[in-house]
Length: 233
Image (cartoon, rainbow, N blue to C red; front, top):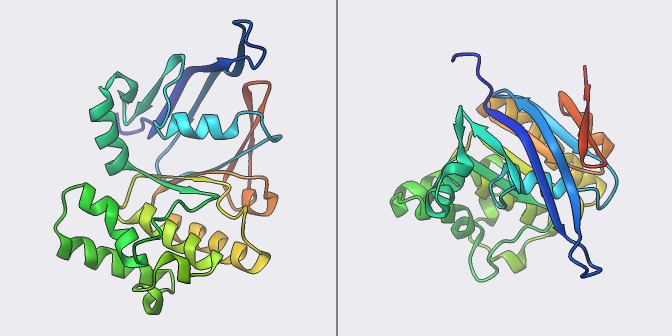
């Protein structure tokens, strides 16, 4: 259907064993339902430890729910085998985390190339795409530097470029400015906003930063395992 959402969460529930060790389980997400259309931007906010990252990890297919379905363009992706799910994730979803998770022994350019190489692209094509994105991030002159030689703000921009190298339909960002100062946070905020408009990608951000949350067109608050929503203007 032309008007079908990019993402649709249906009854997503997730629990973890209680730390008491008595066999009880702590329910983090309870029957979560919402849709996300292509090109939308959404902030997920709420108290620390409430389950925001768990929700993002399930949407990103890094973890499976106890029950419920996650539809991506109408397909329930949790019906895939683990191998098929990994291939889908690499091709369709980009991730940016608070801690950049870059490979320290590689250069900025090599880090950005990695998802494209895993996807089977030639080194030439992967290198060109990575170089273009690093230029877009203002890092052309830093692309051959190793991660350890980059500032925190530069590392996070490299991580953002890596997340975008395959032009994913969905970009997930978990506290992307949590370790950055105000100046670098604003740079990342502006890049996320511009890239959403430029590439038409769907963007979901988990954040405590309400300034970043106001950049998004929707805001979902997670409370007691369920979501409430605020539409923003």
